[in-house]
Image 1 (cartoon, helix red, strand yellow):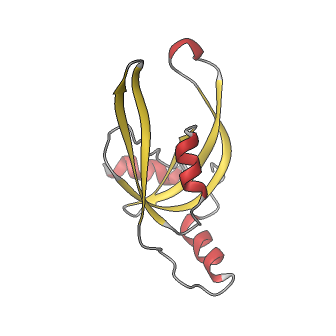
Image 2 (cartoon, rainbow, N blue to C red):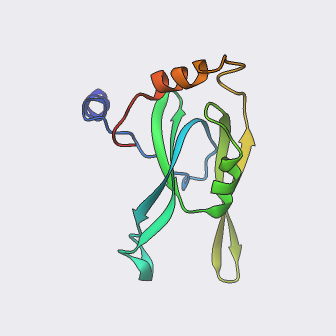
Length: 133
């Protein structure tokens, strides 16, 4: 799908990463920011949800994801830009339906022992100055 990839690049669109597939996703974390997203489901459809958006790289492709999960935000708050982590969404059946959780495992740090200022420069080169994030 080369035309699709070119369209995304030309229009500076970052693909969205979803954990709903239940697969483990190994990503390099670059940036996070407080954000909001519109709820599109259930009784609260149309309301805004507070959370955090993340800019990551998976398999050499820049992607973003949003979460309002306090558990996931808490685990990722302990990480630094450049850290590699594997994130997997888990679902457990309970008496009131399914409960969603996340596992976050450490990976290798992509940028090791960079001199002060080099890590930030390297991250900017890798992430770029995307106005959509």
